[in-house]
Image (cartoon, rainbow, N blue to C red; front, side, top):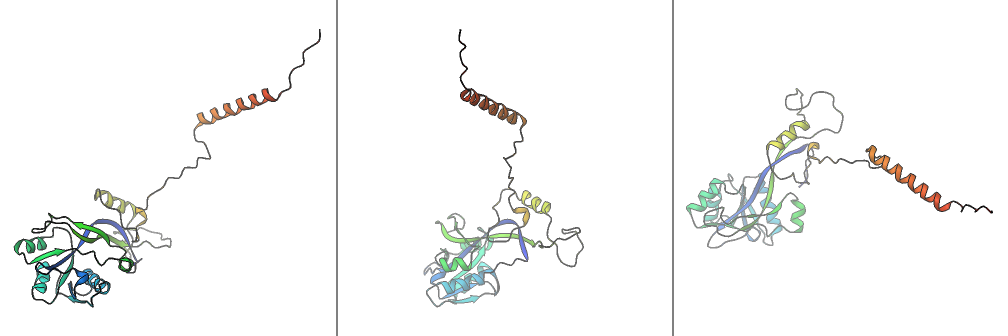
Length: 251
């Protein structure tokens, strides 16, 4: 995976989790499957399934489906054309809940067994995650999986100096980056949310502002006066120690 620096991350708006479906009677994890069903070619789940197929020990093939719905994935598992199906979804997605509530021949399995050192280098934006046991009907155990952030992207800021109005209301032939105040407003209105993954190119407004104060110049007059008094006392005390003893006058 190569980062596209033409775009920059504006805000993290949520997370999507990897779901691995399989038959309940003969559960097969994606890394052990010989055929992995995924979404259409070019989709995130199809690209991920291709990585899993290369990471597993079995000579697996990827079966792209017509769509990324849970029902389409279940049909591929029941027909025997795939042993496991992968899809990205927000936990509790309606079609997954309806599928697992209406049948007991489809279940979820752990989907993180393939994410080892080589795969982590290929997919650096993935993170270890867990689907709680009470998220789906019939799943009473936590499911180990992976997650990735849902990111709001915008055109990346140019390194060259640009004079003129910027932002969504500006009239340019090419899209312009959002202004810092707009990016700050978006993140402020999202409330408490995760920070953008450090692997991604982030907008400049998301970089923490560090206030470096130069303590070599004392900005407080009272402290300066106190320091002068202390130094004067030390000079006076040193002079008392170093001065010669006065001679006593003879009578």
